[in-house]
View 1 (tube, helix red, strand yellow):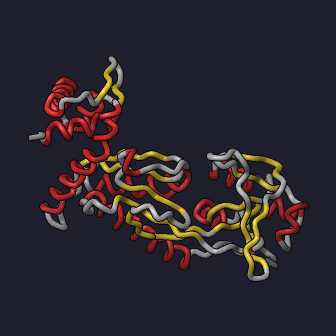
View 2: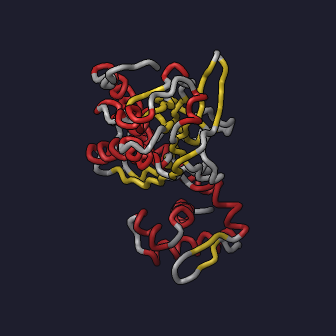
Length: 314
């Protein structure tokens, strides 16, 4: 009979990429982890890992087993959490993936609060604009923006993202305010370079009740949303970004929204996780924290509206 210790050691070694890192996660020695994996290989009669002095990699047999093994271990972990009761103290490492700027501006402050309240909760956060595979890459959950693919994952929508077009008051004083999307051709525009294609992200609008997508000629192209907001506030030009990136600058008056009448529909922001697993206490507190944070943000917007410009025509 396969032992849980071997399955766990194998799963954590694959997840972390080495016996040493798996040992730290499990609170064991690297030799104990390596011996557990070796016993598992002996029980199965196959080699699961190629070993070097610094890292391990999966054999073809190991790849076949890794996903199924991870699901078994996660189910046991989830059952253990459920057995502790709905109020069980979150424990273990929460592995989350999120878009880079959303992660820095929204998720990191929330996770800092959660780990302060729950000292047994560990964190492994990957900030990337790449579309990650939760099951194959071993994440508990991922933040996704926009319509979701039919992937068999459970999705909890907790907020929305509204694209807004902004510029600094100084820039608008020098160059005037665009009255329609067509006017962007006469303005300096800041473009976001998409990480997957390397091309500028198109700007989205609604005009005459129809969706309109265009890519203004860029006077500057950047791959970081925060840098774009700082550049726009410094007067470099217009930009279109999600509202959460610009809300502090809008509230402070260092940026002004334009073309508001042409706003496109907002996009859902969801947390997705594997549907086969139970919701562990550590995943539950993340869900509750995101839902609470979204409610707090809506209340803050209502009580702290953006500073209106002297004359607003769009």
